[in-house]
Image (cartoon, rainbow over all chains, first blue to last red; front, side, top):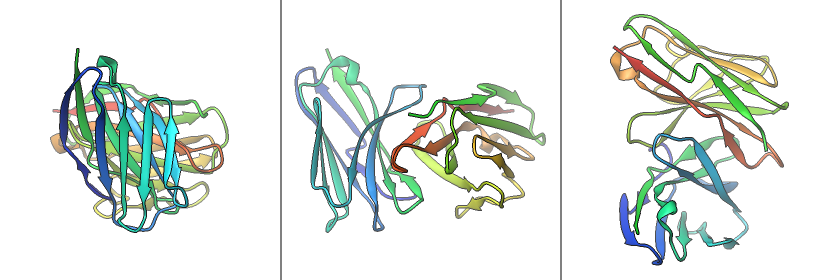
Length: 109
Length: 114
């Protein structure tokens, strides 16, 4: 990818479990955003964390950012079958928006 | 949030031809972008569409292959020129809205080149 990698590439869990996805990036950033994409569908914006923030919550989502390590993580708690999708991080490198390689999450009912 | 539409939503084209994709936003935005998403892959930034000046292309993308227009703050086009099967992909436009932070995406144009 243009900006960095995400791991794992794929993750399969049972409904009710937590899912953690990690994103690494290469350059200094203004903010980092997470998106969800259901198969064959458009991108849904989930959450934005600014470079001066370390952690952010939104519902069942928790995002952390470590600018010294150039990494971020997305935690989805109490996962549901409807969370099955691909998840991408995207960095705002000062008016350039680059995507990570993505994590495919499968939540089994 | 910005509402973005793209035309066409999908197309099947013959190699060697060109296709122009339109992106319309319901409000004026400063920044517009074009991305490509190949099957099963992440999004790759093609270029930044600049209003009133030439687009800014990312490494590996050139104006002759992907000419871009942006005549005003709500509209842009991307042309995929002299297409080959390797150009089969989803092409998405996006804008930055709100406090110039959140990036919103159009529904994409699914292109198949035979």
